[in-house]
Length: 173
Image (tube, rainbow, N blue to C red; front, side, top):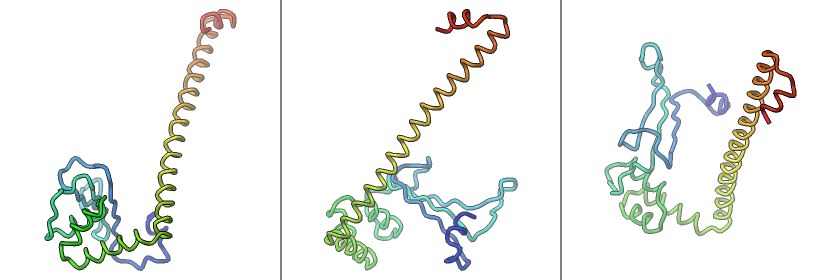
């Protein structure tokens, strides 16, 4: 298991949760939270109850703060863009939310920490840009290789039909 191999020195057994917080929609469901369990492909029976994968789709989170929905409050915190949104969360009078918002305010006030966060975000965006560029470059190379293979295949077929190099060049160029 990849997760175990990556953290085998830290892993002591028990439950494994994989949490994905997405700023895009991955499911067609209306609900912002999806839990995926490991199931046997043939029988459909749950393989283990020790592992689950959770997807939180931020774009599906309701705009209205519900103080009784803790998961939704955390999603609002993660998705908050403005100080006003953070203050609305802080004003729910839920200690964990107040503390989390205060940590964000403290981090924002710390210029060195803010610069590290900015550099981290820049590195992430640079990596995304590099991957997109590499993908496009790979597509172009793949198309060129495909055209060259097609041309070579056509040339071999034409030669097999008895055409000379001059006739093939005249036909293809």
